[in-house]
Amino acid sequence: MIYKGVLTKMQTEFLDPIQYYLVFENDFIHMNQLINKTISIKLVGHQCLSCGLDRPIFRQGFCRSCFFEQPTAGDWIMRPELSTAHLGREDRDLEYEKKIQLQPHIVYLANSSNVKVGVTRKSQIPTRWIDQGAHEAIEIVEVPNRYLAGITEVALKDYVSDKTNWRNMLKNDLKDEDLVSWRERLKTHIPEEAKAYFIENNQETNLVFPVEQYPTKPRSLNLSKVQQYQGVLKGLKGQYLIFEDDTVFNIRANEGLVVELDL
Image (cartoon, rainbow, N blue to C red; front, side):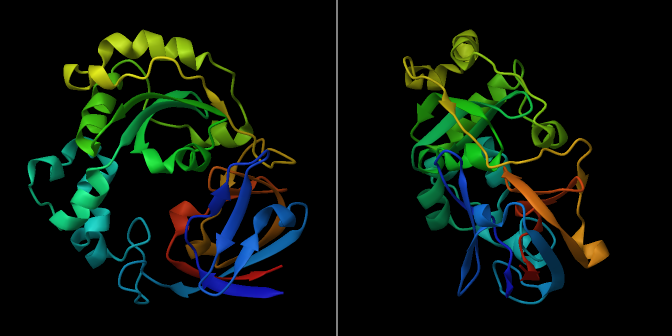
């Protein structure tokens, strides 16, 4: 059967194991059901996630002009400490920025390839951890806006990483960490403005991914270069498809590509 659609990040359900769904405009695919089956992926075009035009994708699923113009791609998305909606100051669209920035945010620790600090909206827990391929995570601060979460993350980056090694994450080259102990050690480094929002008594969350075979030397599939790929799906972790020949394909990094999937 052939499916055609625009790639957007896979939707997930927090079950044991995580359930993955690739959603197209008029259909969806339950990806867990395809593990151990052959999949062919073919690039047939592009569609900007904002304007919908067939233009080369620049970043985050947007064409170049939309990336630099749309509020959904503002600098504060990747750098929450740049948020200004709490001050009533507009970046690109104040109403949109108020909607996203002025809601509860979580600063968390997640262990995917190593312990890292991150920020997400409270409504995105545990989706954010799933997307990062974390096998364990814990909330450490819950604040009322994105700015406070951002400055907390910046302060903690001096003491814990804010990056994930995607190759180690996919190889499952990890060790369990006591995230409660990490949380307690980092408590003294939280900025004064956010200290009152420290979460005292929660426990870490564990996540299980549907992977039959981890790659030993993961190779990232660049569909824009090869145009078409075929392989046996062996697992799903983070936003990656993992194939039998150690090829891995990051759905999130390829948002906006129009593809045909032959299953």
